[in-house]
Length: 504
Image 1 (cartoon, rainbow, N blue to C red):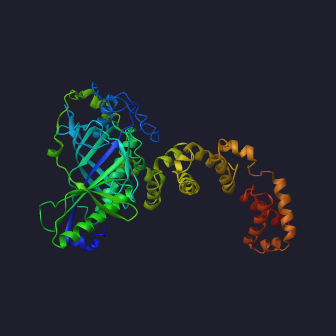
Image 2: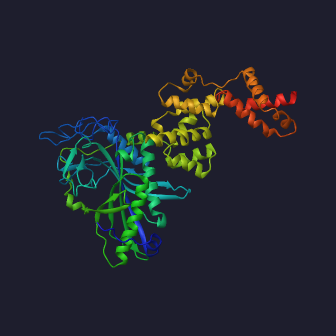
Image 3: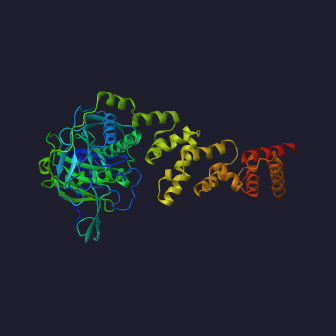
């Protein structure tokens, strides 16, 4: 497929105003599926064997009837409230009709014209502290479809595939779809706004405890609608919808690409096709999917087997009172409490380590120490093993290592060996210190013996120190540390060297 011409990004923004709309799907971590008693694989069984989390209701077998998951309703209300939405006194379900192999009933149970939450607003903050307010049109409940795997071909997509496999584990998993209104005013930062918004949604649902929100696992998926309109006009342009972009960086890149692609089409006198598009991470471009369907194409009609959802005012207020601190406000508070600069703090956020650092600090570590370990050694090892740092160690373990340093049991070098033992499954940090014999040597007699041996090998050092060249002690400190296998307190060694110099 020939790569379409792209207009330079700056030129595209001079001629056209970008307008985006974002649809975010959040898989809920309920115990069971949305309308059946089948266990929910999103609640910790994402890597289960295909077609092992399915039941008669999920497959739409004759004689089966759906039953609404009460826990999912509570989660949906909590999320709606966290998005600043009004909660509907009555909301109902509808059948969204379409045929696709991953949709076993040939329709999806969703909410159409009466969603459970509507008319909200989310505050997002960009990396430099700039604040945007994103208007929310609705958040509605629905069930997920299954997952198709296309085998053969070069792209992993249905085009060119030899055959397709379907896994119905995900069919019927509870979803909340959050739909924004058109987002104006992002201008050159529109791609960044899109990524920051989805990141904020992730933070909100994690704070609520209703989803793992792992984009790489499909717990959180984003469809990005992009359109352009000539500067000075009011009418919105024709939009495209880039489906299921699976990382924040990819969201930013996909939106930017569509702005450049559409600008080139419009500038050449062409017309943008309203369609879904697929994002290709390897090439950094989108490709056509299918013509975008409108509501009429789905033949929505009320779900006859389900009663309307009517949450009581008492339940709504109970859930409102239980809402956690808004992520944007929490980040501002933590940044101030920890005393970090914007970039220092942003590095933690970008690494997905805010909660880990916060829990490590709560367990007794300093903010600087927690940041050092999570962004340093743990991130390095995680990168080598291709996992997230939080899969390697717990905040409590990191805080214990910091405590060992603070009390003088180990130094920084030994602490890395302690972490190595913890990651090898040898026990807690204190147990590793004991088992490996990693404690700093605190016996002054042993240190003085090592110092005297080092001074004997470098007899001119004492004279230099007496002449005011205190930095000369560094050579002796290095020799002592080597002799002690790194298990000496360099500060104490220095003190003893200076004492020896003063006494002679």
